[in-house]
Length: 85
Image 1 (cartoon, rainbow, N blue to C red):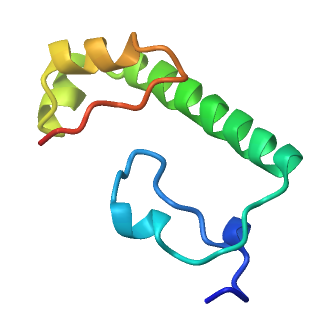
Image 2 (cartoon, rainbow, N blue to C red):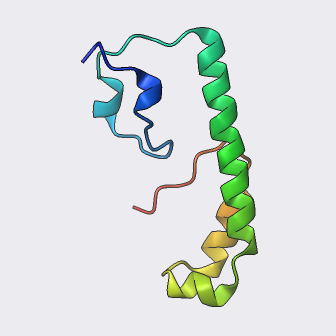
C-alpha cells in the first residue's frame, strides 16, 4: 500500500476509525499537511454555515433535531462535529 498517494484517497474528516491511521503511507511534507488542514477547516466552516441556513422543516425531514443542528452550526471550524452515537 505504500505506493498509494494519500491525497488521492480522501478520508472522512469526522471519522475516527483507528484502522485509517494504521495504513502504512508515507507522511506528507509539512506544507502539504498545513494546506490539507486549511482545506478541512474551510470545508467545516462552509458546511456549518450551510447547516445554519437549513429551515426546521427540512432538518426534521432529514431526521435532525433543529436544536442539535443549531448547536453543531455554532461550533468553531477547528472542532470536529460530535459523533451521533
